[in-house]
Each structure stands twice: as structure tokens, then as C-alpha cells.
Amino acid sequence: MKNSIRIERAIKNITQQELAEKIGVSRQTINAIESNKYVPSTVLALKMARLFQKKVDEIFILEETD
Amino acid sequence: MESSLLLPNRYKRLGFIILVPSLLLGILVRFFDFQFSFLSLSFGKSAFNTKNIHLDENINLTDELALTGIIIALLFIAFAREKTEDEYIAHTRLESLKWAVLINYILLLLATWLVHGFAYIDVMMYNMLTVLIIFIIRFNYALNRNKKITE
Image (cartoon, rainbow over the protein chains, first blue to last red):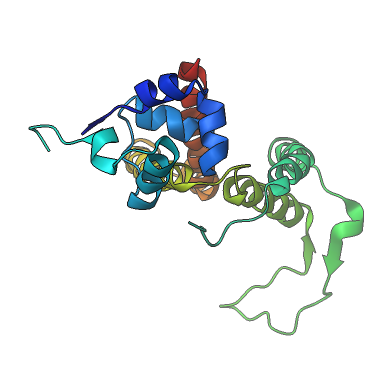
């Protein structure tokens, strides 16, 4: 699974730290998700989608290997 | 997501404050036969001593004090909540614990075959603490590694 959080962040012009604070997680978590090392829970994915005003599957995209 | 069984974040610092003197005391006891004289207990001639059971008449509790301090300190450090304890931290915590248990038993197996006689008692002594120590190192390494890549 890949995600477009880094791009969405750039559009909204917020840092990892700011995004982390807005959805109540640590900065490491955002970093781990962006670098595809950690797959977030549904709750966290929904929170991000709400913040970016996108659908979850517009931010998180399944890959062939999934 | 609230993870249970964790202590408040300040216990991490408290753990280190307890660890330093306890570890020093432990080293003094282990390698220099240090004892606090006020921690000596004497039971006199024990009525329980028979030819099969021998209870020490005099014991000193300095080593008990040192080990208790070290274990409590390591538990505080290992089980203190991170400032932002979220699902990824919980995931890393569990991963590190899994890792620590595995490495610990690999080391124990190696030591079982390589260390013999009375030295093996030392192995068991250190082995009481290695799960927690390996966990603390692995967990903090994993979190810090992620911090650095961030920028």
C-alpha cells in the first residue's frame, strides 16, 4: 500500500509535526507512515482523510502486491 | 487508543535516577564484596538447622537492595509512557519486546553451551535483567532512528 500524505501535506503546506499535532499522534508516526514503514489503523486513516478533506482511498492506495 | 499497563512519562526519568545508584551499589556488591553493615541480620543459632536443611544465621541485605533497585528502575524505564503514546509507538513497543525475548533466549542458549560450572550462575544473574535491557535499547533505538530520518 502506498499513500499520498506527503503530497497532501505539501498542498496544505503543513509540516509533519503540525499534522501529527492536529490528529493527536507523534511525529515519528507520521514519518513512519509516509515512508511506508507503518500501516495506520482505520481510525487514523479516517482522521487524516477528514483533515485533508479527501476520501480515504484517495490518500491510501492499494498496490498489486497487497 | 489507550494502551494499558503503562506508567506516566515522568517515571522514565525517575527510573534513571534510581538506576544510577542501584547499579553502582550492585557493582560494588558483586565485584568488591561491599556490604552495608546496618543491613546485616542475625538469627542466632537457628532451630531449623538439621542435617538436611541449613539456614544461614547471618545474612546481609545489601545485594537484595541493589537488585531490587535495578529491577524497579528498569521496569520504570521500560514501562513509562512516551510523551505521545500512539498506535505506532505501541506497535514499536510490542515489536521491541518480541525482539528482546528472542535475543535474550538466543544468548541464554549460547551461554548454556559455552559457559560451565560456577560461571553459569553469573550467566543466570545477568539473564534476570537482559530482557528488560535489550528491550529498552531496541525500543529507544527504533524511535530515535525514526526521529532522525524525519527532516
